[in-house]
Length: 599
Image (cartoon, rainbow, N blue to C red):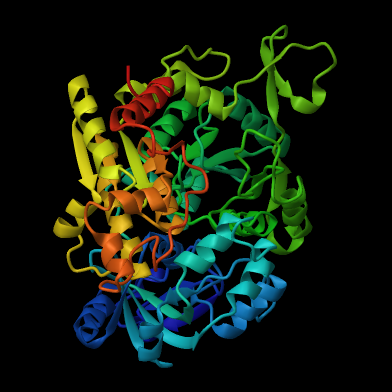
């Protein structure tokens, strides 16, 4: 133990971090604090908060996105111990190259504040910066230590094992969604990010460790998940816990979501139901706001260190833990199977947390029970339901057997997966000017209105330009921005059970892909590519665009002096050279009926 005077602690803004002792009048007041306290947060004393708020009027501000807010919360509550802020350049380079901080401590994931170039050039070492949430609420103050422009190609190869964005989604996110400059420095936290949902489950490492002590749990095995759990998962985790002689901390990730993920409200309700199926006083449910990187073995090691900071003695690791393709129904994986388990196990002595391998469990009909897949003998009747088959059954109202999942969990999932005929969806029509997009959209709108089962909205390219994007020009960046604005509106319509018909030119793949990923999260998405040749479109030329472009009167006309990149994988390709608008609409309607979106 070391002792500090109260004045010293208050000056550091850390008065609330130690244990205050009652002492006789006239004696010195001391605070006892362990030299290395895992539970000590980076949140300052309330008197320091008042001082920071007054001074912050003159600070530069950085508004954090959802990924950055996840990182900040886990820095402030010390889930990222031993970090006391964002990595400086020396620590960053050491982590990227050797999975260690500059002082030698194991830390496999770079945690830096990424900013744009304008912000980076405004900063200097020692400057104080206010970190705010998306609504402008100040959460922390950063004392700038380092500012640099990293080589993301090197980072991608070291962290993910590749620099090819087509092979690994984490690389694509790093290059497309992470700012080009990094800032390192120490943090003083005013507040943790505000959450209004499931507050009783959003426990800090200190709170969870305290509950372990109250329950008398000396050995706790951490289990992290992003997906809903069923009977096989219960048997798998119980088996692992028994072998380790430990209780279970079920800690689902509720940070960032990805295309196809369930909303976390449904996920958490499913977790609350399945926890009731475990033996009493054996499992505890808590949520972690973690921004996953999908970095395979290195991320598994990172997760293990985080669970150690939450008080766990063991950590369950799947053979494909944190693989970007771990939940594919096929056998494709980016990292070698078992590599994550080997990585975590090889660092056990340094991290102080034991790796427990997760064994896949399968249901054997003649035994009427789950057994490890490795113990299946020839001739056994093994029954399984894949995640894609589960979703198909939910969307088509089919039965889910009780050997696979509990009725209470299935009931929650059915609320999240209504039949496709009740879901919202978007029809996104793309093609050259004159290909027939607006005409097809108008015909489809009439057909959908006749069904009278869902509200219908038409987002025509020209109408959107006049009403939603009137200030934009026709540069590539502004064209993409216009299309993503359309995608956002369509996603809101789809999310609320409506039908959105979009009919812009949308010449670039990146904005179309962005819209697909966004809208698929909420309902159906059907991309219709009108492949009508340019010469046919020029013959139609109702707006006179092509004639003006050929005469040099206007510039930036798609197909003439601006490119059109055809979609890589549209649901439908229709050439309207010979097809009438009614015939094209009928092709779209038949596809929607085949997929179950209309009846």
